[in-house]
Length: 341
Picture 1: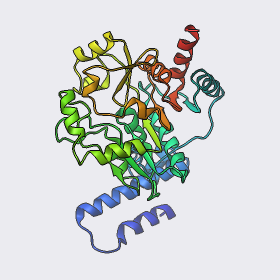
Picture 2 (picture 1 turned 60 degrees about the vertical axis):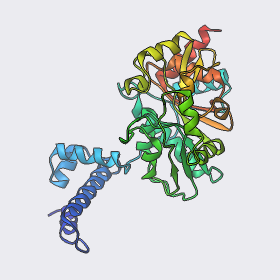
Picture 3 (picture 1 turned 135 degrees about the vertical axis):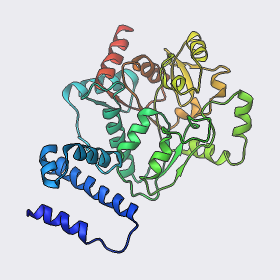
Picture 4 (picture 1 turned 90 degrees about the vertical axis):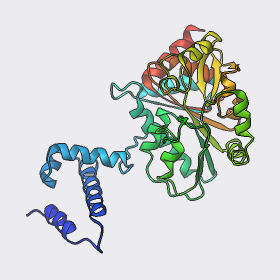
């Protein structure tokens, strides 16, 4: 028997203390997932080799590695950018007066590229965690930022807190799968504060009533005090995410487009020149104010085939200090700006 299998057998037979059957199975699965991840990402073994080493089927090995990644046990950060990405970063910083920019290569056919944006966002968040002066981070919500949260490893700073900048994407009591604060809560030692109201409510009057509640005010005050804010950017189209999940109707989105809206960020709408658009629709949305977005550092994470116009509008609005996007999207934004002179 190989040393590896001896160790595996010993682990299975020598577990400390009695455990319930369900917990024991869960611990065993976690142990296998961690071993499979080490063998692939550190040991450089193929999944076929891991299958032989662990005496498991390749399908099982694939599931275990996926489990390890999903649970935040595997994080691969690559420092540095390809030359073509560096050129785009320089162009975007120059064109939009950004403090900095991360352009990451497109390595899959995923659109939007949640894989690379999630990894790049997580890498940036870990940089913030290493900065002892950053105490409070405001986060938006949505699919791109939830991908970032999935890739974030454990953060052990007990003095680093997170606060949601937006209401939830669910009107009911169901769990919002894109609530970034709740996704981060399992991975950080600090505190996480959610905004326990819907992102979109029935009327501006309802919004004012909710925001006046005593249990909401402390969260709103925390939002304004955030050292850094991380937000996504939404496009203005019938297929945009907030329409797909029923927060706004197609007719409402068409009305916003008719008024010139090109982008949504933190519940605020902007036209193609970066000017804020205020309407009865936007007055029903519970998010960070445009004025607060422009205070301090605001990181924008967004990309994909539907986003160049929206990101361009958000950059022109002037609240973004650091952009994280993918190479294809960055190229499209630069081309748009060059065509506009």
